[in-house]
Amino acid sequence: MFLIKVAVVGVGLALATASPELHGDAAPAYGTRGERVVGVMNVTIEGEAYPLNTTLWYPALNPDEAQDSYTYKLNGLVTEGQALPDALPDRANGPYPLIIYSHGLFGARFESIHYAKHLASWGFVFMAADHVGSTFFDTTSAQDVVRSFGTRPQEVTRLIDYAEAINAEGAFDGLMNPEAVGISGFSFGGYTALLAPSAVDFPEITYTAEGMDVR
Picture 1 (cartoon, rainbow, N blue to C red):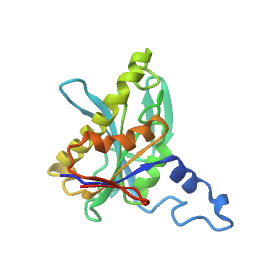
Picture 2: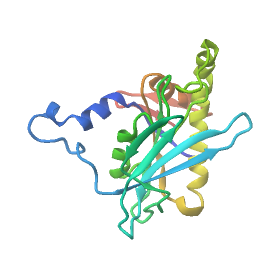
Picture 3: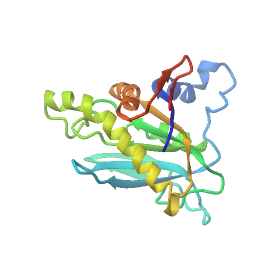
Picture 4: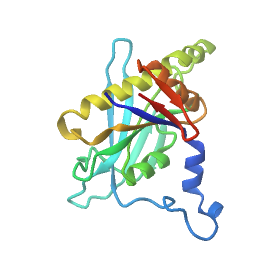
């Protein structure tokens, strides 16, 4: 079973990596893009209730030195990014920590592409899904928002279960470290990150100054 080691609200980390001027003349150690090629892949995680449209960013191979350019399209939203679509993962240098990202209310899985590709370039696997009834294109009522308080943590556990499944076989076999799983979120996603471990049947959840240790 994948072990959730820590839950992180991602706003502070995103600002720290994006703002070298906050640290004086020298850029912080992780302020610049890492050396790893970033792959991007869109998948649909099926479920009894409803599917989850999900995107993965991960350290990838680029043997042909292809241009790492990708256009993200979602319900009329178009954003350019630096990643290789459907590239083979770089398993040789793994396993890598896994980060599950939860977007804000009226957001979507593409709201923090810069954050996703930055962590992937430093050797993380990053997964984000559209929280159903909680995005800019499908939140239609207050009832959708209320329902999301309960469904969002369950959707995070579905992402973790999916990661565990693809980590066991196929192209992603052994890519992720099952003992290094983090949950990051923005705004409503911060709530989701803090509550998600309670949706998993773990016997012990311990909060510390450094974060959350779930066993």
